[in-house]
Length: 157
Image 1 (cartoon, rainbow, N blue to C red):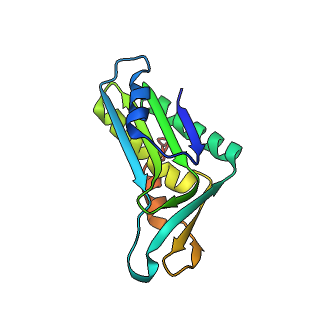
Image 2 (image 1 turned 60 degrees about the horizontal axis):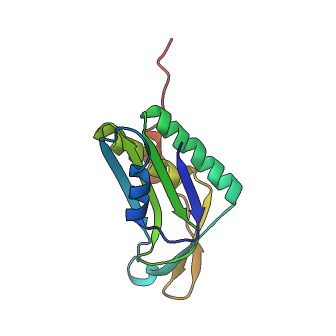
C-alpha cells in the first residue's frame, strides 16, 4: 500500500528511500522525482511559493492515483510526499518514489505519478514575486498533454 504524506515538513530523501527499502519484496529498482521551487528570472523571479489544499480531498486523490500506479506497474512500494505552506526558492516541494522488480516499471510509474500530480492533485499555488507582488499559478496546457499520454484507451470492439 502506498505511503502518502501531505504537510509542511521538509522532505528528507535519504530517509524516505530507507523507508521504502524496508518494505518486503524483491526490489530491483527504485525511481525518484524530487521537485524544487524554481526562482525564475527578471521581473518574474520569485522568492517563494505557497501551496494550499483541502487535506482530506488532496490525500484521497493522491491515494487513488498511487493505487492505480501500484496496480498498473505491479509496484513493490510507492511513496508520495507533498509539501504545503510557504516554501522558499530551492526548497523541496514533492518527492515521488516507486520500487519495482524491474527498472522500467519503476521509471514509468514515477513519471506517471508526477505527471498526474501536476494536473490532477487539488493544490493551489501562489508565487511570491521579487517585486513584492503575488500571483496564483494557472494550469499549463503542456502539463495536460504530458498527463494525457498515460490515459488507457480501450481497444475498439
